[in-house]
Image (cartoon, rainbow, N blue to C red; front, side, top):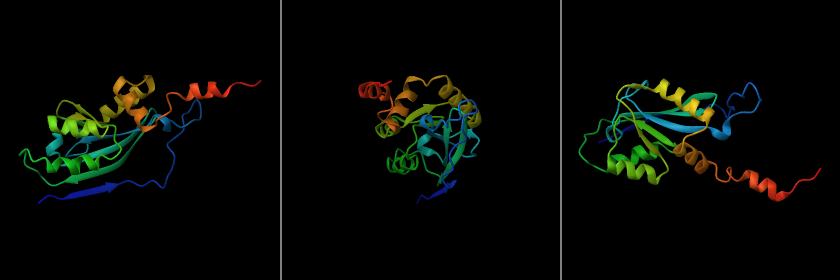
Amino acid sequence: MTFERKLRIIDGGAAPPAEAAGGMADSAEQVLVAFASADRKHVNQHFGAAEGFVIYRVGPHHRELMEAAEFGRLDMDGNEDKLAAKIDALGDCVAVYCQAVGASAIGQLKARGIQPLKVSPDTLISGLLRDLQQELRDGPSAWLARAIERRAPGRADRFEAMEAEGWTE
């Protein structure tokens, strides 16, 4: 028998903080990412046997905890049923950081548009969040740019659409 508990943070729809320089919020480039963690501070779980995930919304200039999901302890028995609930818990995440992930889980995650990322055991989540924010500020890597585009289709060709409308002065 397995169980699942979720804590979802509800902020009443408040917008993320605006950028200091331009006054525009960075919502266009924010993403949801998950971390396989038993203590909510370190990536210390194998994806398939993860007892919990923490999910953050991350933008170039902000990050916030959105959800924590906990699962009952599962044996590493190759039972594929345990993966479905975990993948469903990741919802709109573009990535999940874990210390290991099996081939079957990789295929299922990628089919849902979620990039599995393997990191060293006990990597600090706060450091990964800082790195992701820096990447969003500097220009996302290829996988992250594709993930952002999948979440906001049509953004990449907005300039072509503006040009097609023509200019008037």
